[in-house]
Length: 388
Image (cartoon, rainbow, N blue to C red):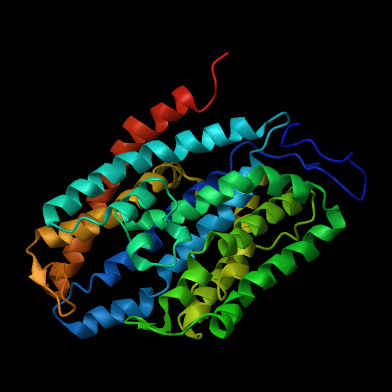
């Protein structure tokens, strides 16, 4: 049985009846904005400024940017994978494509991270390193695992569950009648919003972390636990089915963008755990189909311009590389002992810190282009589909 095989099409149970464009370039362009938000978040976390007030100000405005970017990626994954499904596709074919999309870039950046960690004398333990290599680190409610090696790959570990489960989840969603897609999406979104309630009430709140009023276990549950984040992925699948079945209500992109900005501001001002996903999941869920409508309608936008699409295409490589460049680039400026016993870079003036961020961004762009051009794209072209 193929992934796309489902119940017969009826008026009540439609399956991809709306004509669809092959490429959603505006969403590709938007993907880079999400990756840039993660970059800004990790830049803020370095606290590079000698003036602590400058560092705190940057954290005040970028404190949830990374969370929002990751949530966007998770919803987008479900949406785009559903949109790109073709009749006759099978689970093995799908898994093969995802493997060759993810694994080569991961292995290359994993190796780069090991070299950097070795030079810095901060290698992780063998269990943590192996967990990172095989992308299972997000299943451990332990910062030494989740933050191991190239620490941003915890989110790729979460996506690994998405890819493994997609054939089943997609098949189940095709069984939902067209009229029930919106109610189902609302329930899934509500469950995602309610996860902090579960974490606050049923998980231990001690020991609390240095950066927020919650335990790492509580944060892990709402933000890093693959099963919980599967809700956002499923929401993305449902939204794609809503659009394909002609049930989308055509929310103007400007309105959707304003709602997303409002959600971001809200995420900075709600109780700690609600700022990770709950405050922004609904605005992001509305933004993605709205932006997709740009290409569906055949319109031009800055988001589907040539530059934006190119940046979107290298965004996966950019995401995997950016924290390595920031972290070890800052360390290379001159190792400095931190108050927590770790090693970081030297305190910089505001002008010096901004210059460093711009330089790190430029270096990451160049390295991401190289990784995409010489690893990701050629391997995808050669191995993603079996040759007849």
